Each structure stands twice: as structure tokens, then as C-alpha cells.
Length: 96
Image (tube, rainbow, N blue to C red; front, side, top):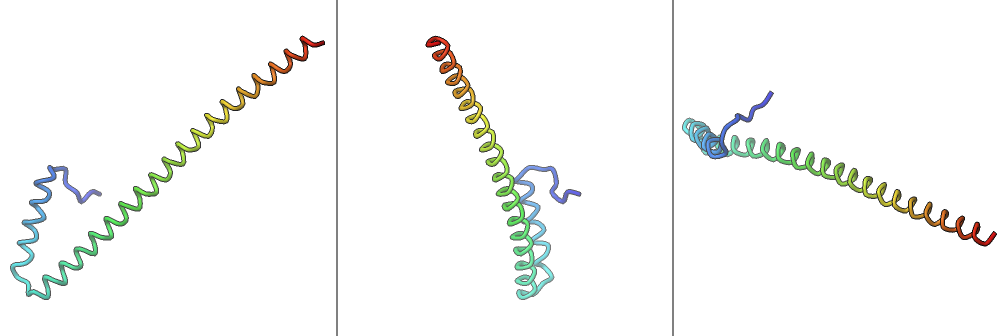
């Protein structure tokens, strides 16, 4: 279920202005304040959740990249060691 309409950012923002004006007509200042604070709390909750999800995703992506980089480096080191072992074997065979 998606509460976010598939529309342009400007139209989406305009809809918030329209809803805001419709809500303030029949409310006292205290009721407007209470509703406004409640809506800001909802917004903060949604924003905090989205931000933390992005942080977790970024950490997972960085971890995967780091693991891939480490694996590539270890493979290069292994190839270098194999080459060194082969060179030493060749040197030993030359001496024998």
C-alpha cells in the first residue's frame, strides 16, 4: 500500500498546502497547534525511519565492497606467492 501519489514534486507540495488550509478553518489555535505537532511527530518518525534504513543499507553496501576489495587483494597476494614459490623451485632445479 502506497500513500504517496505518483505525481510531480510541486503538485505533491501544493497538495500539502491545500490540505493544511482546509484543516485550519474550523479549529482553534490550540487545536491547530496540537494537530501541527502531531503531524510533525509523524513526519519525524517517517524521516528517522527512512534515514536509518539508508544508513543500514549504506553500511551493507560498504561492507560488501570492502569484502570484495579484500578478496581481490588476497587473490593478488596468492598469485604473487605462487609465482615466488615457482621462481624458488626453478632456482633450486638450476642449482641441482
